[in-house]
Length: 353
Image (cartoon, rainbow, N blue to C red):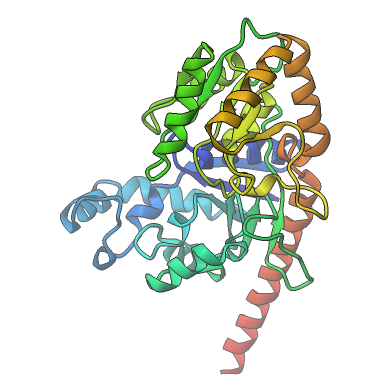
């Protein structure tokens, strides 16, 4: 079995997911290679001009300039059994984003999506895509998800075309060893949530806690941002997360997660009551934020606390650190079997006609 992975080079979650996927496939002894997803921007019809180009002219020029290398890439992709696209939602479903339909016609290969959550777990996203006339989950032959809970916890059946394979960051440069000091990290600002960020920074200043602020999404490389997590002890999230790769990486580096709402870390709730474990601190209002933050700092130990947080993270969420290679393997076999059945039925229908 051979698997091709298409991903963006941008410093964002699809790159992290794709890297972890390649490492899981290596554990399974499955050959895989990674390709630049931008070929799928160029393969959209010019009439449906890709949102990645400023104009129809720029789209046409890109098609012409990359005609030969894209033909070579397609020839390479034809040698793989399954193609996995690592991309965010809603980007993966926009009619003017990726040429998935072209790729399917050209290669007649099963195409899967790897994202942090399964689209049908989010009625909100489904509604937005439907209203815009975009594609839905059926665009892909299969959907790999890091988590099985977003707005609600999904259930699977024999007819399901998705599976949870977790997140694999075990071989990253994230470290949960001794910290040099107590340092907080404030995540990237989010429009509409400025009040929460201002409260967090005000509390940090009043408590005289050193802190770093992340600014300019895409500005940091994956390695650079992980080195920041390695230095810090507390991570303040800024908005409701459909999953939160940043949460997983911060926990892997021994950071306590602070959030103004228990609803924000959606994919991290556990048990029948959908509660958050002790590696999360939920606060309500500025005064409670100050009290809980100061209490955590007073009880924090530079070596023991990061090690405890990491141990709890791996105990409760092993699938968000090691991934789930067994689920990945069984799903790949199902994808190939279903595709083979579909191809046989297609040939039979053609011969009858």
